[in-house]
Length: 160
Image 1 (cartoon, rainbow, N blue to C red):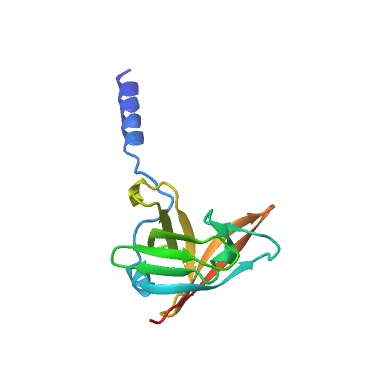
Image 2: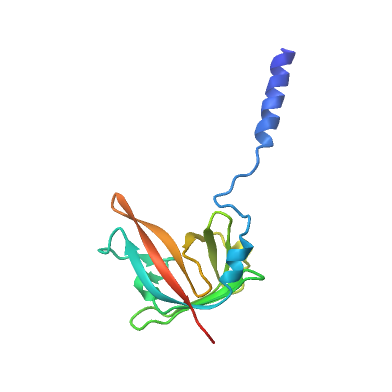
């Protein structure tokens, strides 16, 4: 009986001490973050795997409406802003918080005025690719029927 009780207590302790698991790695890739510092523009949005569908990006607008959007990334505090202003599309602007983790993921939240980032539940995880000092890509995945496709946002540095 004592062995069963001891085993039961040990099992509860083991379960209670299980480390918290997260969806994304939070170890930062500081080198990649520093490369992204500054002002950027989305020069193109393309679909890999299919070109016959429409995607609403970030629950804001059609993905193609992000072409020409302006983005600012501040790497020392992982904040920034983005503005959509393409003709015939919704006009939208928001502060953002973001980071790049060691897995090559770009993790971002759109912030509501007056609400702190820690109180903003939803966010987005995109893969960062082909990063240079003057360009990079953010790649999102979308379900298309029973298949999936990638949405590629091409960012180019704005020289001011």
